[in-house]
Length: 361
Image (tube, rainbow, N blue to C red; front, side):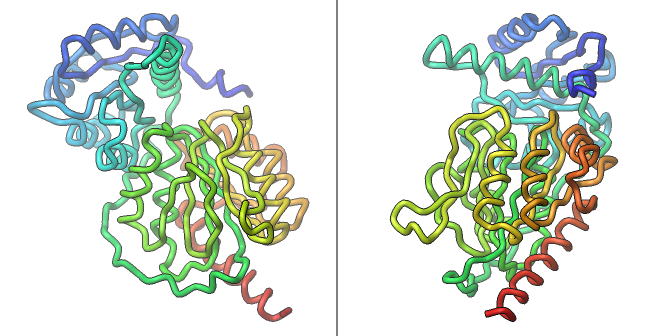
């Protein structure tokens, strides 16, 4: 089944929340250009939003972050607990690490910038992104969202052997995936000896500040893939599906590997997974999480063919089950697990691979 069929046939009833009167006019105008979106009302702050939800029963809420009376973070918590309505953040605080991270941690669909492009092309891109996210939000399984605990982790010095070539874990997800990635990686131990590369749906302008905040809830170092990054054990590299990522020889040291920003492609998860299988062979583990579409199947297939391990999050726990459902149907998945189960399996798999490598050397 095409993922487009998941969207409801009736118009997506949308409530627009922003304290700026101009934005309460502009955002509805942007959304009105989509034939399957209907703006049913606006609100000037979070408190007014909660009142209007009772009256208007929207399918989706677009929400600003910096508002008086009740700000965006408090409003998200209230909506998710009391009403479980999908939320798309439309905010000028696009590069503020705290607000972006908190919103995604709490389970919003996405965090996108207010339209302010410096050119007509950039403005059109920003506006189309808002329409896409609101439309996609209507099919989100909000009942599957679980907020990630924000518990600061103690700083742990990395004593891992960086001269070794550790096993690699590649994780792919699209819309609303950052929440799942946080759940899994925050459960890994400080002595996790593998290398983790995550490809997730996140605006490139958020990526670096998001990683900075992510590092506060995991003992592992978290780095954004905005340029070539040499691969090291015990490090998490996070890239955006908007730019993609691939593994290849390091520019200065051809015998060492780095992760790079890749050229745009229709299937960025496949590209990352295939490059991992090319270089790491049976020392590759591919993990597919929530998302729309069919990306990842060919990459998972290649990992299996080269002797690696393939894992999917169980469908019942996915806010968007399309990615994993398609991979399971295509027979490219070795094991299906919960987020907690995935973290445990990664720990045991990486240690098993390292023990096997040490025994054979």
